[in-house]
Image (cartoon, rainbow, N blue to C red):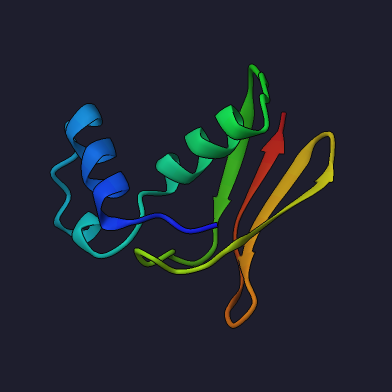
Length: 86
């Protein structure tokens, strides 16, 4: 899975995010929102551990560790973020 510049730009426009860092890195909440939608997850409460940035067009893998935990990682750089249901 990867996020293109156009996907990031569209997300930034929708949420009115003007953080200049997001010109080159994928907003973490975009990743979370995408996964929640893609995997049809309806957790009412969760926390996210942001461990490393994801750059635009970087290939990352998603691993659903359990019904309470999702891990996003890259083969080269390891774990990027972890989503845990509260």
